[in-house]
Image (cartoon, rainbow, N blue to C red; front, side, top):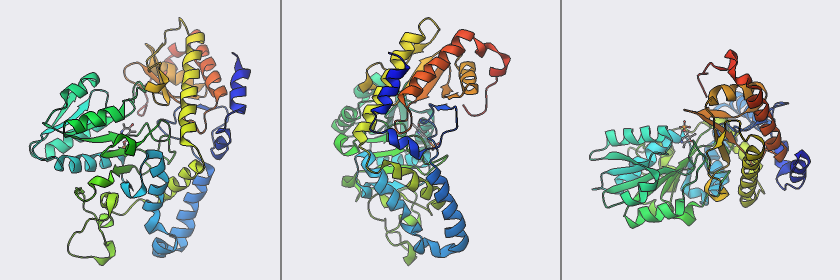
Length: 409
Ligand SMILES: *Cc1c(COP(=O)(O)O)cnc(C)c1O
């Protein structure tokens, strides 16, 4: 294999044209779409229109005239097919953390008499903090964190909710969501899945898994922009019983009746809470248009082929240079991310970024590379490993320039 083989794979790639919707800086290989997806110029244009025309000229009339009021539904309709859901099961607003809080409180309340919110030690730390906040708020509730391979054994009649992140942020390892959801149900528990590193990159089928609730982020593989509104999924069979802990007017059945009494809105709408962030919702709406006509299976397949190609090339080219592949080698067990261990991960990444290869690091020694299938090419995989090779062989990462830890990694 050589670079021409990689170029041939790009030439044969049915998704290749999607890259044209994005704008990536010249000379940059962007392998951090798992942390912040890339910009599409159409999104910048939409934001300009919303701000200058709809807000500036239309003022408050734009809630009706520009369709602001229906934006949460419009975006839910775009996201639902990526989740294996229907749009009445999806609410788009707030951050993933806030939606996780709402989902956990609502799920815990559906299982009175059960104390435990169960999670594993591979979960995203912030998700465990949020669960801890829920336990501190609700009576007779505690969070129990177990090793990943002990989750199924720990599921018993004291577990109210099993909450897990589908793709491990550190290693890219993937949970078997269908199996774990079934195990939770056998124990009488509900599931709350975090799909932040999943939707848009790996196979997600909430209906097929029989999942109960889920949340996820839209600024990673869905390219909504920094801090873009997140989604909350609630399976239709739970709709009548679910009580949203934030009973805001936009989650009310009739917000503009200004009724003295609360009446939950239909389906997942009850989780909308307050006024949705219109500028970022509009940006997300346009960002998601790139998925029109895209076969999600082809995207999942491409993410597996890209990550396979990267691992293969790392094995060939970086042998003896101090890196170790941390991600599962079986493509069915990993997300669209490959993590490498290196003793000097932080300075290595800083040196790579200075050379135009952007990934990120996680403590203590993990280099992460994300392969967003809509805009990463096979030649990028090839070139990325060449840049890694240069940095590792030259040991340029030992330079004092690269030892400082930035605030955001
Ligand atoms: C990115 C990510 C989040 C983000 O949460 P915010 O509320 O947007 O900060 C949450 N959970 C997981 C697993 C993530 O990867």
